[in-house]
Length: 317
Ligand code: 13P
Ligand code: SF4
Image (cartoon, rainbow, N blue to C red; front, side):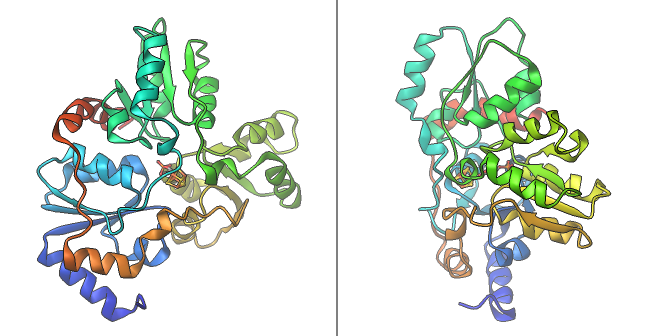
């Protein structure tokens, strides 16, 4: 299917017919981002899903995001255009592994990144996203041990920012962000000395970026560790004329829309998430026509996970 005017009209007509709101993550294909009623980072989209009046949510993103929407809005119909859209980071810890880890640290507060399955969220005290992970951990009394999972690079960022020694970090990673590495960033920064660096905290290169700033290779104020939503805010605020972006390449579309005068370049232009890209124009149209794929979360699991997700959307407002 071509994402032309007929496709657009039909998608929006079917959405109206179903009383559906279409949400798209910043890593979606440009045509999906452009047709969505709302585009944003995982925290913003969770908040919109929780507050929306629509009876159906069509989540153009990956499965854990649609599951999170279902946990927050159990009485709504939640659809994802292709339920095979998983996440390598969410797959890096199971419910059993988390239960075993908790048993080794009785009394610790469990903070899970939103990139986790509903089963893992059900074992969690507070969920977070990359935009409020530091605030979430800072909200926990300093004398309590914290188990932070599953992303090791986001965990390292939170540990640096909070200075917390009693934070234990799971060794998971996202294959897309882990692949954006330090030597590649250093090379690109040397070739573009005036550029700002926008780095997602899931990146393998986040520590290297701070190292480059520490040794003076890049001015410290040019290095920004940001969630995808905060990258858009930073793009509107910066006086830089070029920005190197270390995250999934779908992000470039929203950044260019937000600040067309800035030259945005990917640090690694192969950093594409195959799961995010499963939500094609064809899949979105089919999903709306057929009411598929419907997302179900076992009600007992959803009930146990809801408190942690609710706390996540309340912190860092
Ligand atoms: P944010 O949009 O919250 O920064 O998340 C990034 C991500 O990798 C989602 O899969
Ligand atoms: Fe998961 Fe990484 Fe894809 Fe985000 S980019 S959905 S963390 S695999």
